[in-house]
Amino acid sequence: MTLVAIRGLSVAFDGIPALREVDLDVPRGGAVGMVGESGCGKSVTWLAALGLLPGRATVTGSVALDGQELLGAQGATLDRVRGGRVAMIFQDPASSLNPVHRLGTQVAEALRLHRGMVGTAARAEAKRLFDQVGIPDAARRLDAYPHELSGGQNQRVMIAMALAGQPELLVADEPTTALDVTIQAQILDLLNRLRRETGMALVLISHDLGVVSETCEEVAVMYAGRIVEQAPAEALFANPSHPYTRGLLAALPPLDGPRQKLAAIPGGVPEPWAMPRGCAFAPRCARRTPACEVAVPSHARIAERHSVACVLAEARELVAA
Image (cartoon, rainbow, N blue to C red; front, side, top):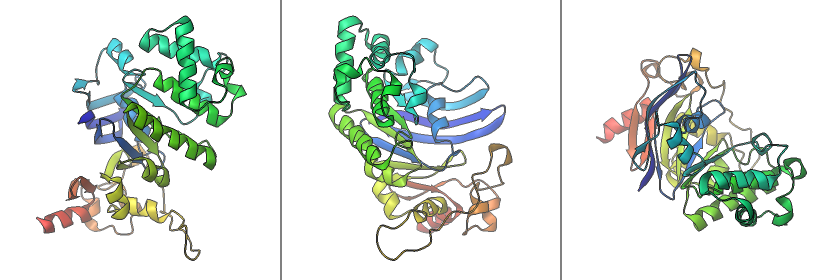
């Protein structure tokens, strides 16, 4: 059953398109990964969906939460959704937590806003949430300030704050990038355990394919403001079909076998105001053809629940038909 349905979501800043016709479903209780280089539109997708972009952004399309349209919704409606039914945690916990307020106070504020809890009851629930996310000596940590905790512990505080509203969906925006490898694994294990215990859905935004492969059931690969490939995680890693997805996987170092040079993707993601004609990835693609520069490729279905926006995939679909 679909919890969030995004259809034709587009974003322009000062008239310059940054996100182009994004379609994405998040099933209830499911885990969806969004991968791609920085600047591909992963974070903008969810900032737009939750009405968190600045006023100069023009947002069109549809974002439905259990059938309720969020784009253009009243502020009071969005206030109930944000932090309540949908929570979001960000890459750098140090910039998300208020440095001059105690951690318990900040979590208690979320409990007051979304569950009406105050005083002793809020403090007791904040301690329970700290225990749930694995913060040691939780009662004492409630009175600590963010600078007194490590980056990994502060990220756990952010997860506890996100859980305060008992969300149906948690959007985790690069939650492990600023952490060392050991702490990354602990945070991912925590997110997986919380999904099992609470039944909430998870959207994991990352540029790390390894992180996504361990955590998510569905994967959407984004490039230059569009989803270029979407499939179940197992199918995508077994049969990557878009040249960009193949390039991302080829850039990963092998865990065994002889040492070899990594196959880096040449060039960089085009700026929104300098988008090439046709396929945005064509200038970096070793398999490009003249057809790639004619029109933006549409999504071709190459297998059940596996679609690719590439002229080569379109040709495969026509042959199969």
